[in-house]
Image (tube, rainbow over all chains, first blue to last red; front, side):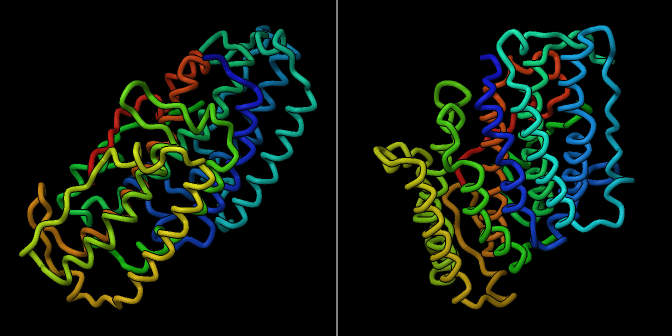
Length: 181
Length: 181
């Protein structure tokens, strides 16, 4: 299965609304809880997604089109949100994410990418050669990895509360970790 | 951490809107894909959640209040949605889920549960003694386990498409499974 550009955009376009329905005005006991030291809450994750919109996906797509493999992407700062989200409310972050995502998808659509463009290659500082098609598929899968993570982080809060049902709840057995994209 | 009734209700109340934002009108390439034979798509999972609303959560809560440990819950049919979702559209399922969830939460609120009620015990056919508090925490964690699952099922579709980035995408390394609740 290759990246399907229309399907990728369909998923990317709705993620701000998904996170909004999930997180806006939810008690902070849910949105600020995490899985322990050096782990992220839903609030942290939205900040991370914002940083990706600013520095990762469309900037890297444009680098591939402009420089190909001749110039490596900037490394992604996985802890940028600690600094950038400071003092903001979750509602502000959700608004910011929605605005940036919308702008970035407008930019992506304006590139009017053809199959030959999607096959173009860039250079990732750790992964070496990657294609534009892989970058765009990763953008969508990255949304899913963090929705998956938010579900897990929140469920962690009720790990004890569910009693013996924990045996049946897959989310409590997930050790899936996210790492820099 | 015990089940906090207000927090549990806050999460349960928004899940229909989350799934609506996520799935309604999304291409079927996303909503009907699964992880292989005998695994579930997002469409299947919404059907499973509907069956839970009909037969699991509030019926079991009422059984605990009425019969305590003297009568075991009905076993949950984990494949009921194959029969019950047949011929329906995803939009119909989303509407049905939203309606049932809303009705069930109205019923739950009307029970006006006190701490002593939450400590009451019932009998699960496989897990033996459980409390009403554990049942309600599980209702919320069960939503999260299936949101976690839907994210994973969809990401599976792009397992190859992301190329070397698969190393960084936690959702592609999740072996979390859901089982009957």
